[in-house]
Image 1 (tube, rainbow, N blue to C red):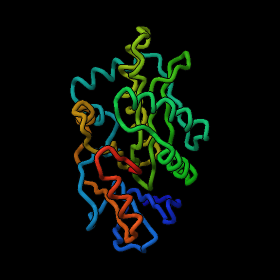
Image 2: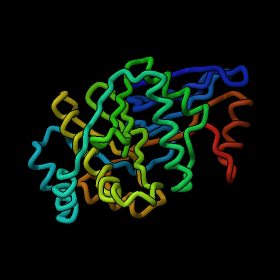
Image 3: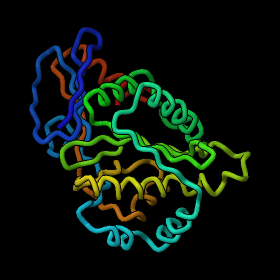
Length: 251
């Protein structure tokens, strides 16, 4: 389990990732947000997440993929890619990633990395559990980023993005097309070599193409649990606001 804490409106706001136990009825001065809990809880809801067993060998990873995905990965390996890995990204690295991701988010019409989420990334980095991976071409043009969190034997995907908003560069078209697939493969092999056992690629989304990509890559459906726990009046108000349509505060 990994947790990070900060103050918000006079209460302790605590993010808890990959909890192995659930402790309800916290004090009135806490709002706890559970992400990918491994156990159910009274105030948590079940979600399907995608995982792959890193104890399998590399050839088994490859064979679990759909025929179409295997073909695209072979094609991706022909591109002029360079992978950069940072186990302790600097503030400048994270700012670079955030700027890139928010362009991707605007293009995909999804939530961006606001100040709240950015500060949470820095807190996770300060705990030494954040791994920054970047894919660029030989001209040092960034094509894809993936941010992962590590905990004991598990790797959890937090963010991933590609330069899909770039439409006027025919020379980058194929490089961008295969970037995410290639970087994901390199992540799997890297974390396997580091001795991690489970790679969690995140839950089912509202985008069928994203879900299909995960399934075609050979990931299995596994149950995880998310939710909030608080006895604080302020915390309950914040949860109510968060759950209202078009208000997305801190998930």
